[in-house]
Amino acid sequence: MEKVLIDTDAIIDFLRGYNLRIRDLFQKIQSKKIKAFLSVVNVVELYAGKDSANKKKKLILDNLLSYFEIIPLDGKLAAESGNLKREYDLILADSIIAASCLKIGASLITFNQKHFKKIQNLRLINV
Image (cartoon, rainbow, N blue to C red; front, side):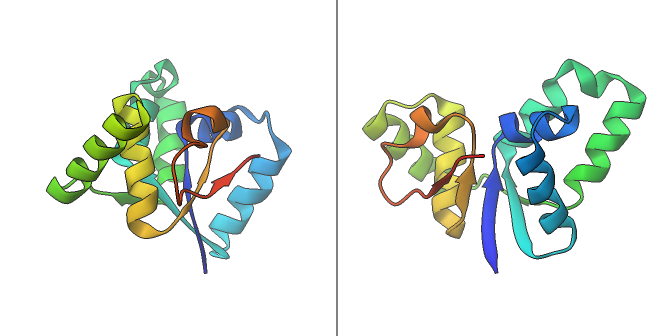
């Protein structure tokens, strides 16, 4: 089964209904044709957004996130994130997201291709 980690920007676009390709992707996730993951960074970013303060929108977000497996940040992943941050001059959040993808062998779905394209062995999917 294909494994994907979806970056925060793609999830926000889905929630706002901006991108039809993202909607198709989420239908595949809901029907379990694709195994979907999030990093802890994605979860923090989504709940930090102002929309999550709205009770109805938070409930929608909670429901959506139930389809994802969250990659925990342990010592080994933290060390790999630090290595990626140093080697590729990434911001901390992006280094954790990239390390999470590499750890589980998932492709990364993101609109921020330029932040991640230099990382070896990281498969990117542009939507």
